Length: 149
Image (cartoon, rainbow, N blue to C red; front, side):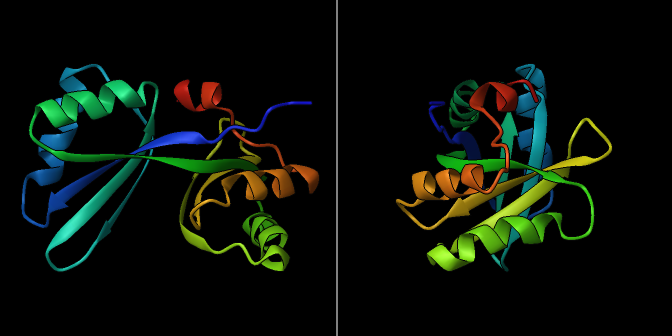
């Protein structure tokens, strides 16, 4: 049996002011860290940059060293067909189990017919969500695949 594993995501809390994102990206660039996927959510006062990269522990460390407030979170990443209904297939697997999706973002896969959906599900339900997605025939992105982004 293949062991299910979640993927490590880095989150950076930013003041909602000009130059904050540029500063984070400069620090990561200078450290040679390439981003594979990212999302930014904002409110009036702050934003949260969430991303996957090849070395999340190192990315978090260099950002902390540069003075940023950084968090590391386990997320579920699943390959989906890049076509109408691809994402719906994921949500329909989780709905009958009552698993709430806190947030998600996606990006196109290397194959034109594929995409990756990154999900943060309610606390403590990652393993249940991953098992259900796999049982439904969906392929999870492994930590190694995420590290290759």
